[in-house]
Length: 408
Length: 90
Image (cartoon, rainbow over all chains, first blue to last red; front, side, top):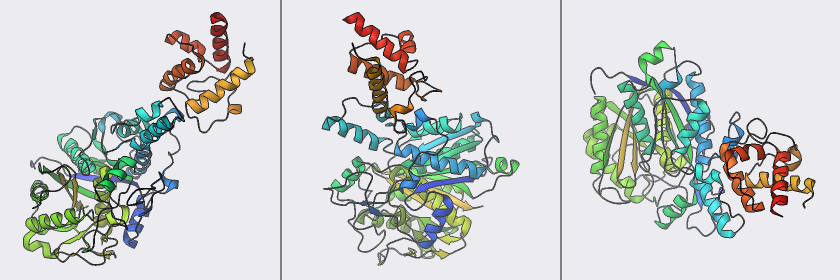
């Protein structure tokens, strides 16, 4: 990192996920070790091998008040989650009127956009109940739609980026936000990710036999697959100087990110975790930190046999002796794997751990995999004073990103 | 020749189902209420869908924005436009 690069901080937080319709609810659920995984209700799951997921509760899935009626009718489920999380994050940051609209950027990750609604329209057409394909299904379909909706709803006129790198999408969005602040392209960036359940991902992961029949158990000896989830998390980031000047509350520091590509396989990680290790090493190097400076890793930890084995190998390779004093946990036993939103939701969990001094547990973990030479924080959260933490995100196709966060 | 009241009722139902106005009932749309922006809150994308709906259901084309603006001013205007087009074709 160039010596002149400004310190970047997080001043606003917002989320919607299976456990929470707000950040305060999310903290309480993480501390309590609650599992949000249950039967699928957003579509008919008859005939699928696994029929569970971590769904957002109905009360948190309605469009927020104040959205114009024409826009409201076209919102996808992903858009609604993003709107709710952004409204909370902007209010938390106290941004209203504090920064010119052209200086507020927007970097949002996702992988399926309005797929769920498109599937419903296609089904109506195939079944002959409707022969016109409604514009809402088309307009809400692209992955870029959520960022467009947010910019429109909150009048954000700075640089805008929608990005999709599978399950590391929103971790990379945070990285883009950090770079924009570092380069002076924006004074504030609203960043994160959003994802809704849909038949395409549910059927696809089922077909791959990647879904667990019971709620997922990351890093458990008996783990048998992941559980899908949905939701959004949004962070407001700005330079420390900018935050201080406007008297904003700082939740945590966003120090760096590192990414890499496996260039190895469509779905499987590299068997030795070299790409995952490289992303962690790059993130540490840019932050100017040594492995022993890290107290906690919020792992990708999907609960598939392969991911957790390879991620543990990569952590051991990077941390060596320092791994023995590391705490490593996965939030996916609690909120499921939220794909394009996972990087942001898990960065949020990491920020809350740093800010409030606790280790989020690996929910559903009863028999820790003995090949993991570090504390996996099974089931119960614990109080802990943390200085620096990593949040790992790995996507299909070998998209690896690690984000470094620090206590304010 | 369709009864004007029946035609207006049919147009209201078409608006609601065709454009998915879930929070609106036919009785909640006044005959002289503006359809776009401040009235029912429809926008330019809805206008494109409405053009297709009118063509599919009545076989009447709306060739340009000028015609569309007049025809889509209200339920009254749309019913008059359709009746005029139908009598012209008859």
